[in-house]
Amino acid sequence: MKSLMRIKNKRAVPVAHRSEPKKRGIKLQAPFSLGGFRLMALVAVLVLVAFMIYTPLNTYLQQKAEMKRVAASISQKEAEKEQLINDIERYNDEAYVREQARLRLGLIEQGETAFRLVDPALNDPNDADADAKANAEKDQPWYRTMWKSIATPPAESEPAEQTDMHLPIAPAP
Image (cartoon, rainbow, N blue to C red; front, side, top):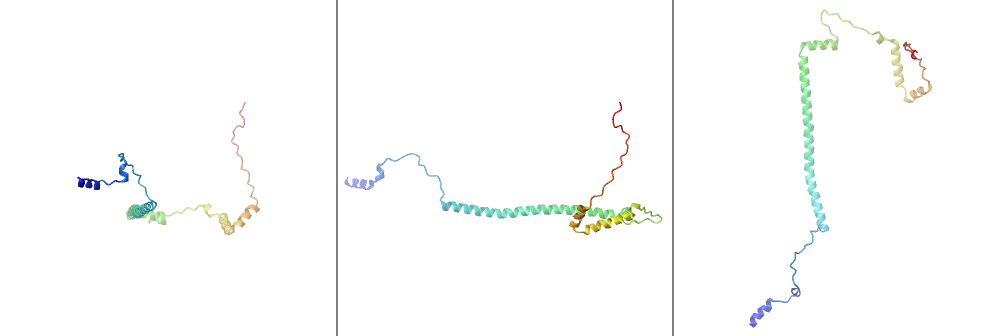
């Protein structure tokens, strides 16, 4: 028995905290907290990941915009090509070529008589003088033009002739 007690004694080592009753409730842990270094490392990793995603994404979006621009350019060039093909077909038509020769070059068919109407208002010699004055005024510096507009009073305009419309001024009694 003594030996059994010795074994018991060896097994039962008195410990200071064993005499206290064990708390059997739910053990609450502190919420996960990041230290300053861990937080900085996490932010650095997130910035690195964002940069790694941004670069290819930016390239993708630029290439997509370039593809849209090129597609629009291609459609514009195709429309221009169609217009040029239509122009070529029109110029292959003999009637269209003759019409354009008459309109643009003033050509006439054999046996036709050409008439040119001259407007007398176009040959007004006073009009040429007015054009020369206008050109001379344009060649002057801006301050002379301004001084002339201030120094010379405007010409008095004649009152417009009042035509009698034969309308009553006051109603007849």
